[in-house]
Image (cartoon, rainbow, N blue to C red; front, side):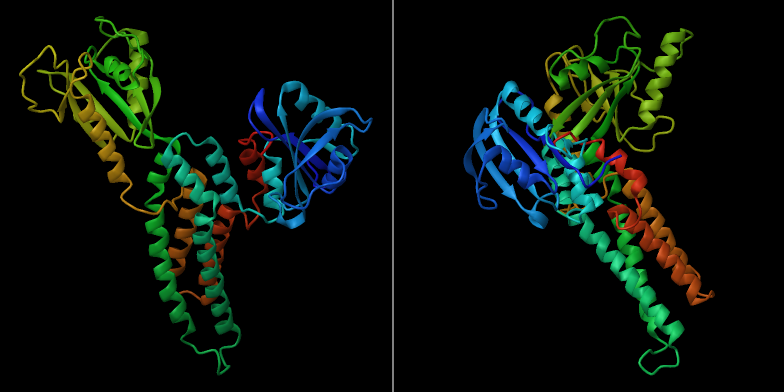
Length: 440
């Protein structure tokens, strides 16, 4: 069981060997331990060159020491960073020496961030944003994560929670002090007008959840169509490497293949699927079943057909957008694009730039908003929906007592509080912090 009484340490920089390695120490004994290793410590937030020694006076290395005292540090407790040369032997020697101090141990996954949360330096949305920022691979993922880590999303939720708290307080005042001159009976009318505005704000915010999840997890684009329609060839052409096996034999692709792309800063997850047709072959039928399941979960489907054949325009369980693409344009030179949104040749590259542009336009159309203060996790979406349902229930029960309607507002505030961690979320913490690396 983790305890805040112990001082923790870890390598907080990248893999070894490296030019520089950063060892972070945090806890009540951090300053005393650092002093034992490096002698007189520099002024807070001022880097100073020091010789790092064991307590037996053996030199480990020479490096920079930075001190972040008390509540002004990342974790909210005394924190020290020691920057040494990034050799494995140097780092291992320093970590080994740190392990000899009493009440000092190696940090668990995400424990520095967890201490920041428990000391009020960050809330849960900011912590999740930090985890996403560390894992961001595209520009839009970076921008979304930074918005969350910087508190943009938390400010919205805290503002809504404060309005709900104020509404409940006014209702309680009307219930308890209705005979007082300074508590007019029309107070609740003002409350419900604001709650109607809040309902619209939460509803509009929830409408951006799909985009938030697409930015964070990637736009799911599935290539579908009949056997030998050129699906695997298109996959390889877009990935610019051989991901899928391509042959003239129908039914070559039996399973779902996946590759990650970066289009204009957006993550795109591209899936190649088995050819869709009637068959009695057991393995191929399983591949088709998986293909249809993948299509149903897609954000966008590229429906391929060789030019001259009809491209499938709808798929069972998929209500979204389908782009019809005629393939093998190098073989069918001069053919018109009748019945297709686009003609391509994976062999010559004809039409691939236009397809790339169509994907870019689709992403921009989905992100037709400037703010990236968007919910990006299923946890956010679920709790926002709970809060919205509670507000709607409070507004709908006009013939019920104010105390019952106020209880629904309390439930709405509780759901918002669980997003930011202001309300009990202990059961979530182990899952969330397991996403972090050791030194963060």
